[in-house]
Length: 331
Image (cartoon, rainbow, N blue to C red):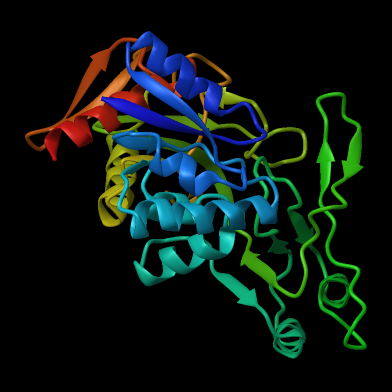
């Protein structure tokens, strides 16, 4: 069995390389950004393709959606994660539509492509603060808490075109680990907005499913009050109802590689906050502990069975490659 590893300008695909070498799986590196990517795919003689998209900019997200459509849907090659999982990846609009259509609890969300409709909404809205989220951006990048109608209207005027030609757009600011921020000038957001109600969050959970392995831990709030991107976690034993919620969401989507980040409010209700097909294990070399022991849960014959061990090494990419092998062997 030979896998193609799609490589872009990031180094995320290196985790797939490490996994294939550790698991003694043959692989071929393919530059998905090259002009002759179609011929490279056709001539690769691969059984399937491993994907870890760099979707930090809208244009790269579009490139992946276009090219993976032709690789998987038109040409019929298996990819991992699946096209449907990656379609939701780093797109808050797509995720919001999917959650609403499938009646999965999430914070109430409004997406606007019409300036007048957005303005009318704000004039009739009075439950501030309101959360603005850019379509693309991990680790809370670009999120704003809108505290008044005036602030919201100013954002709308900045994002939507006026005079039929002028648009400042919304600029996201990236904060480095040295606490210095800089503007991302080549990836502004234009002519669309996503607003979301603010949830009174007690906890945020990171739920993970890869293949038949399940994991969960708490994401703690940072100094800015946000859980996402804080780099602080708690690894106490997760309640079974947390595991059940992760399984429920992944069963609905038939997901095999998915991070389900969700809020727990003060009343114990769960609300999905993020769905990300590619995610890491960078805080600890594990994603869950039960009674202080790292490991995973599996759902076997209607019961949650804990297995002690280290399953998230190499940023969990070994587990992904193993699952892809199992999927192709079962076909």
